[in-house]
Length: 190
Length: 184
Image (cartoon, rainbow over all chains, first blue to last red; front, top):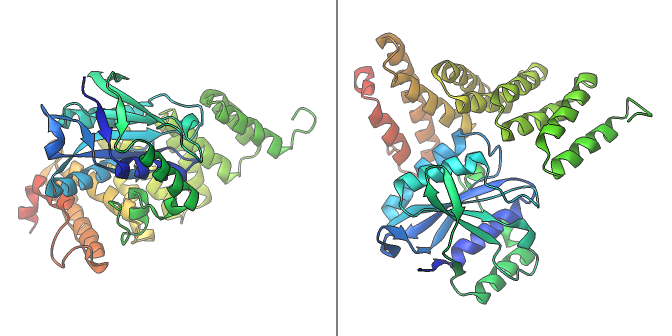
């Protein structure tokens, strides 16, 4: 069973996005290079694009964001291969209907797409292990826990990097799609 | 709360506790009780609107948002949020309503990107609907076209794209509308 790998860049962006908006539901997409697709399924996630933190239950902004990101990634040689989300409630790890629908849509276009839930309980100032729960699409509308392990690109270095970013407060400079809509000079691809 | 019925912070605290425990239905119930007494508390309505959206009870969320609009008719954010809710409910009558709300939001605040995008998406979807008469569809297409020009000009003003170019998403949407050729 192949392991899935997530690059430092993608992981740090996810953590920074969660750190920037600790009191909101956040979500975003994961990208994979076309060359990292094996049998049409992603094996390595090279980047992440943070999408929303406001009104995550409403469908307009994610629709526009996904359309725009598809336009950009096509040109850059990557594909949208996953979706990540985190809840505002510390103890909440379930996949809400909304994230599931978006992930279903992504899975329609890309085989083997994953849905990653950030486990807030495992995040801390000094991150010991990656706080990610990976789910695979088993059947239409059902996302089960993945048998594949998601490993970080450089293991402990990635974790140290993410901890440092949170400690230094650099996460405040991360721009997500909601920020972009408020001020279109900001680039959400970062 | 039993001791002093006008103690609003205790009631709000109770709602917050329910929310923190993840018990959304109980939080909604408490908040409704609170709002029956304190009807002009706008933040409470906002919170209730958010809770309803999380529970996917969009009709009630729309109602809360309408209450907020009654208090602040000139706030373009509320118009845009109500447009979002109606758009999420789906269905063509809701889309028409959503379009009206977005138009109002754009009128009040022409720089509201979300309202512009909302207007673009609703009018393209309405224009593509074969059930409507041709005249109405032309109108919707005109609105869509105007909106796309607005969005493009905003982006080119900040230098993100060249003058006269279009964002890929707009190109995609516009190509779906073969009516634009007739409008032109």
